[in-house]
Length: 401
Image (cartoon, rainbow, N blue to C red; front, side):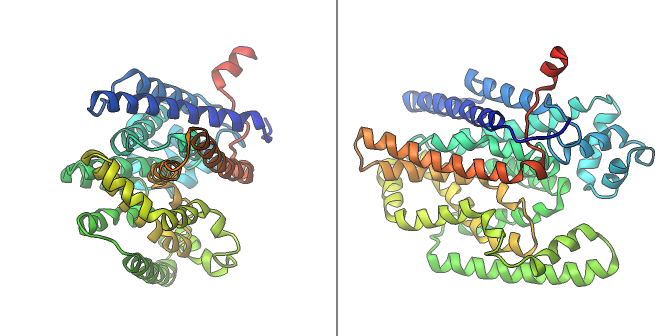
């Protein structure tokens, strides 16, 4: 079946975002009323988890459909115990995938040859990580409009399965970090690193957090972090190209590291990938004193702690923009995507406080539409490369055919 652009598919992805928005809003309202954080086992979260996992697991996966890399991941799983007997894609992935992901596949493959089982475990981890992150770290007073684009990260996982699994494990590590569970923080961070070695740069957030969690971060310090991160990235780039490249250890990472040297510069193409990060830092700059006032005067201690953690995640995320550009970690912006959504929710809420009820509704809609336009542009510009359109629910297709 040939891929084609399908507007109904984009609308369907937004509807998946609405599922998460209504679920989170429902649970947070209960938290406000009860004065207690809600458990993960509640009807709203169970419905959110089930819908997202079913949509991800039972999508049609073939060449050009269901994620550009999904067919290779599927074939690698089927032949992972005997990769040399597999397809060209399976053989290539056997030489490319990180050891943690290979071990996961081989363990599951010993029990079943049905790739849907592998997908259920992977997308189950993704959905759990996403829901747990929002439950633990989203403040009660934020706008939930940004959740309309929350499915974007799961959608990216249709193709970049390994990257998104690694990022989900890192999110779990971050939640444990927020809860000050050091052993589990390190364990899940290490697991994420074994799934995808590029996670090492976001692994550094552990060090960053424990240095700055009780310290004020000024603009000067943020600029300093960006400069230091850039210098470290240039050093890493030189090492990858001149040492790893000459020894022939991993050509894919050498190609990535070399890309920024010949890709036309940051402002030619790469800025489009990080425009939401850049817009967020600008919005925070303009509204900083209002955000801090809201935190200090309108949030309880629980939400203050949540905000502080998300704030540090977003600062670290911004500092890594030049790192991801220099080393061409072009999926780096996905790692802390949900932290940015929470902060966007706070920005919308703060901006709306000086408005009347009608104006608040209009402002929230406009902000949310702006984020939806961003997601629509991102999906439209990559739908062929990433094979994200059309979405086909395979059991229904099989039933009707």
